[in-house]
Length: 146
Image 1 (cartoon, helix red, strand yellow):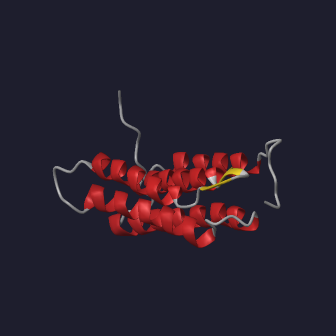
Image 2 (image 1 turned 90 degrees about the vertical axis):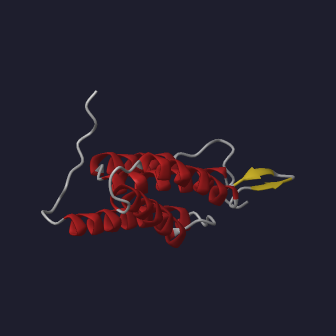
């Protein structure tokens, strides 16, 4: 099976890598704005930083250590680390468990950051759109004032 093509948007590798970081920041910020408008604990700054950090770790893993490199090892570490960050926004009380959607948003934004870091722009943008759509869905148990 042929791997996905990684697009380079400019003839200069480092400029392209900066574009990956900028795009990760923009997408993380857009999703973070949605969370902030919903008055959730992980807002624009948190999700921008998660997306930028994930993209940066991916870029460093792919380009920073020379050959042979295995970027998938660092991507696996990002998943574990983001799990701890996401766990910090989950609250358990007598009313139930709150923050699961925000924790999932943190996790999903990290994945978009990894996709941008890999140069998988279409997958990253499509994922961001799907994340935003998912965040607009409401369940019958949604309590906006709790």
